[in-house]
Length: 234
Image (cartoon, rainbow, N blue to C red; front, side):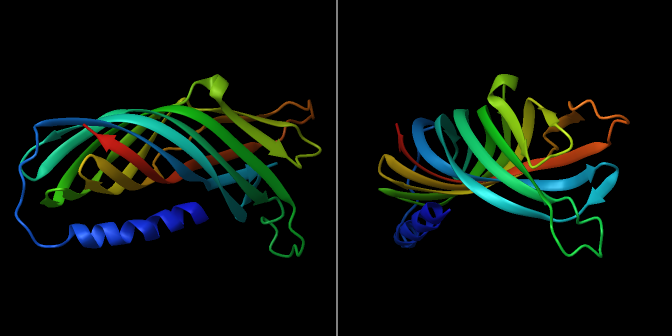
């Protein structure tokens, strides 16, 4: 997270420079590029039920991952359409207080949930060129990102789960809504982007300990990603 904050601070002078007044430069109809970067991923709990009790307290531990992507743009005078394909590694951990259902409890009992996923991502975004004064260009963009994660690259680990043994099946396809800023200097560009997960990524949660009667478990969660990348446009 500190690296992302530092990168954003370094991006500010570039944005300020790009905002200098000047004429609008025409863009090629089609441009494409490649970029690499890092991301900070968080898991957000919408609903958590453990042993029939609904919980309300959790702590977030955002972790850093990385990604690589190819992208292309179809440009008009001011607007553009942007898509491509990428490979992304995302990691996050969230701790849920199993005693949060009891308002009289003074001692938290945290269940740690670690998520690790390697995904194929496809953004479908539209953007607007705020400034296009050669060799500078600054743009904003927004739109959905589709994230496909094969089951063997999608894992959830539960710690401190006694007396139960929990396992989870996650959905292979998730969708997030993105908003971002791009600054280009000649063929080099920097992207800063935020992605908010839309759908619940948990398919089912079950206990493998064989406890009888079977306990009731449910977790609805989604991811949120902040990313920063460096790339070249051709």
